[in-house]
Amino acid sequence: MSEEIIRLEAVEKVYQVADTSIHALRPTNIAFRKGELTLIMGPSGSGKTTLLSILGFVIYPTAGKVFYGGKMLTNLRENQLADLRLHEIGFVFQQFNLIEPLTALENVMQPLLLQGKDSKSAREAAGKALQELGLMDRAKSLPKKLSGGQKQRVAIARALVTNPAVLLCDEPTASLDAKSAAMIMEELKLLAKSGKAVIVVTHDLRLRKFADRTIYVEEGLVSNTITDEAYYK
Ligand SMILES: Nc1ncnc2c1ncn2[C@@H]1O[C@H](COP(=O)(O)OP(=O)(O)OP(=O)(O)O)[C@@H](O)[C@H]1O
Ligand SMILES: [Mg+2]
Image (cartoon, rainbow, N blue to C red; front, side):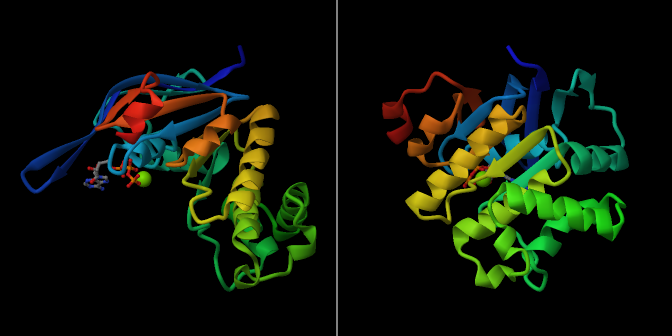
């Protein structure tokens, strides 16, 4: 078994909207390991993004404990969490979230510049990351000149350039055709094999063949025992 990286113990999230409480995530115990590609599936509104946001230290749970590399995070201050996010976590989204006026290379450089790296070393590392994703010939292209699959590979390069231990992806293939989606999943699988914990939210059952395990979320309840039939009901 490879090393555990994130653990949730009795973690819950309740959103308070006016006088209604929305129980977005019911008490959840779950662990994620390096070297593993995990899919998170479930209907719209079931709590997938909420779970992913807790795993990425974007939101705090309402209750429960979050451990990162064996260390409990629940009492960290906002700036410590932001720091952890910047160094340990890479994010990939459905809509790529690239900065339009910047080239592919400049987009990939951004997290390093945020970390305070100088632009020469940021440029070098960004070039390497693009190369790993087979995009070196696109380094100078603006996002609008790239295909969806290429944009998503740039977004993955940007997520990876800081060498995070964890890669969190929210519907990374939802805007892509089947062929590009498969390429992206192969890429994510390779990254998991290289020792990262890769966690992917998706609605697409066909992606399960790329995963080491699949977790289902339904009405805020996390389980891994729901059958396909139940999922499609
Ligand atoms: N910031 C928020 N404030 C209030 N309620 C929220 C907030 N974010 C999410 N929710 C609610 O929490 C529940 C879970 O939302 P979440 O975004 O985690 O679902 P999801 O599974 O990612 O859905 P989708 O597949 O549509 O992206 C939903 O009922 C949603 O309306
Ligand atoms: Mg979502």
